[in-house]
Image (cartoon, rainbow, N blue to C red; front, side, top):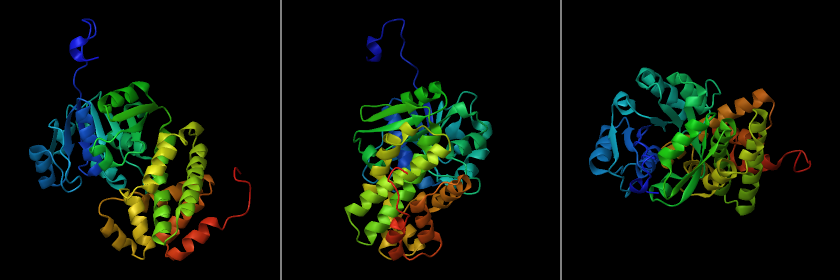
Length: 347
């Protein structure tokens, strides 16, 4: 129902003012999504040229070449100005830098502002999930924090290709507010109270995508890819259940949906970086060739540390850590993934 057809006792909801911290591909894309949903959006970024281009030309050629942004998206290099007065603040900075970006903004966040984590990782120094980092850094109660995760490859969404996502929060009101801020004809949000499960799916699927990329970089085919994806979902589920997550989250959009998209798409940075490693590049060379942040490179270690502390076996994650950070030759990755004791599939 359009606003002019609303009955007199149902006035149109006021337009939301939103901010996005991070002017990379996903941050800029989510800004466009919220603008298309009817919000006024301010993007914060460090690079003055990028912010000027977003504000004046409605483009971000560095991260989304050829994409025209909605006119309701503007940008600034002043983070305090971006978040001041915002109803919703979405955070799309590299996960390992999130705390240092957010802590100086604690006093600028309004008393009713909701924070949204668009990040997919686990903090190295603390093993905290990103929603926990956001809450701690901004001094927010958990019910004022939400997580967005799903099969959400930035460029496809920026092209307004249809997709769905999951918005997780311990507060239904918070989840609904964020859903209102981003729902459009091509972007369909579903709410879910399982913050732990949704976040772990988003963090660990990047690690599994690295394993798939490495395997394909070595010339291995679809059988191997399907095996790694399927057993990777088992690892994600095993860790999530150990942390109290809901089992129904893992075969859904945030679990299998995001895992499939990230492991199969050439637009996935983690899959792309893994392919470079598989073809013989060093980690530094692969990072440079990929361009942008591949979260799984750093978060694989924190995921493994978390799993080890809980006594959860994650052989694929362990193998990725050994290849990327401990010098294991890539030719030994595939045998290592299958060198497990024989047992029933569901064990």
